[in-house]
Image (cartoon, rainbow, N blue to C red; front, side, top):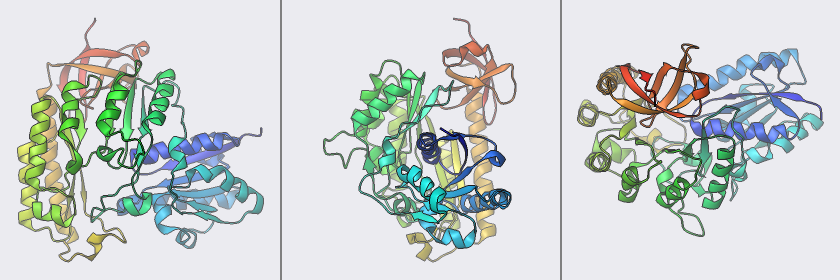
Length: 441
């Protein structure tokens, strides 16, 4: 079979990264070999995110840059995929001439036939319809050689309709994979040497609601915990309103479940949370945090925050700051509110001026940096179990791995330790990582 070269540029979340991995697997079957050199490519795919305006701008900027390659090579095929493709459909062609195909989140499995059709007829193809079953969820993507951890999609879509979010419109309603399919995939990954799996979904806490034979998220975690060669389990993302006491207890009772949860709160103001249609109040979120820390005192808690949501007053913003002071998250991903077309928030009054949003975000991030530094400094002198993932980006003499809390740990060591769990005594806590020395067993 003649080899052609595929270049994929991925924007957005871990779900998109996993989607790109599946695209590469599907295209390998029709002769495409993946490359990191866009100039070498016969096929370029831009896998996009539409959660925030900045991600959209980046995707189109990169697409414009890559289209210059098509000016030199008329046979080059360029595809536009993901949430932004789902949202814009055929409008992509008017924004960037030369794009050959646009396909959405439910049509990844049709990619090989779409590419063949473009090659044959050189006609533009658009596939953005939803289906009752997401076929690509079951596509097995072998991990890159030497990988230690891997993502596993357990579901796709969302039924929550938060006022600021486009996901339900672009990925459709919640659909869960059967536990049998998930367990089979994880066992395959274990054969490839994977030690840690991260379960993916827009809201993993609601996993299983649409399955014919009921299996909730807690039951799934316990099943994965029994897979012999898997040593660690993580998951993202959790919705606070669906965080059950049974799942909280898993952090105390399920040995392979890492002591880390990403629990996006978005605002510390109950009034704003109601406008956001989040389904919980600030006090209810505080209660969830208290239960988590009671069940697992060492748990690392990370979150998301949006500043400048329509109608957010200085009082609402201060309530967010007060929440951060009380909870002291281990880290927070924070953003200025970005209006997305078609969402309920787009109709709300009370726009916050851009300068005010910028000022609020800067102060919030400075506060979180102080909290993160305090948390990391407090770990100096502690011994952390680290799963070694590979060489450090900063030094060929250092190894890099993650503690169970999700923190990056760098230390000196031999490459033969990659894939193993080691004990590391932390000597220095930095803002974005920890430094330590391996303890000889």
